[in-house]
Image (cartoon, rainbow, N blue to C red):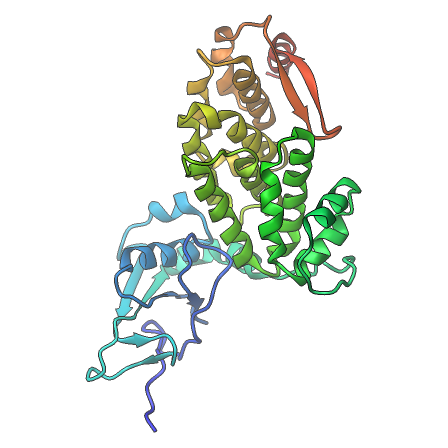
Length: 351
């Protein structure tokens, strides 16, 4: 019987456990964290080394993308690659048995790792957030059952069915394209509440969902409808876990037809977690104040009001105060008429 050597951390000499999915990062590559604090990522093909390196760096930095890209090789972190790795047996094969798989080990400098240690530990904590969720059988819900539960605001029951069978997310996703706006908004908010619980149980399912929503929105043959807003709602309800996808939302601002969806998503994030949005290039939104419809201008004003950002002040003269737009109120789940002059006066008073 052949016996192969398990991989050993090049920084401390410990045997490391088999890579698995980690609830942070941006790819589907398996990864792990050694007791010494080094991060390792598996690329089974050997052709995605760049992705494996970025994944390792991002995980080591607790998902802080901007922080990660400011680090310098050899001074702030070190990396070591281990070749001939076989994922199935979690072994380093002898040179006579060629295997394309590789492991990327990365370790931050001690003082930098200490800065991110608490945040990294918090990301991996699994608090009991489903203690009040009822027990239900594991099964796929029907379309009518989901609609009925949403209309009756049976959120805890919906969460329970998704905890029991996360495949229900696929059917729920389809309702993001429901033609009636009020029900569609209820689906978006419901999905955010489900994600808030599910992220501690099946984080990989939430990551997959976000990717599906972004890919679907980018498909020119499809409509974004509630997909981008749902991404915002998930980010809103999962704190910093998936905040790196704010970059993807902002990228959709370059396309006129996506702007209302993006701005509603960002507004919901700014409303609950303004500090998270401020870590990204939110000032880019100021480029869309001039020569845009009142709805776009109004939503940008509301976002900057929630962010308490004074940068908006020098752009107020570019907005016609006599214009109005329809704003969806998430408290009442209804559309309301908003006068831009009221928003402008509110912002001027605040600053």
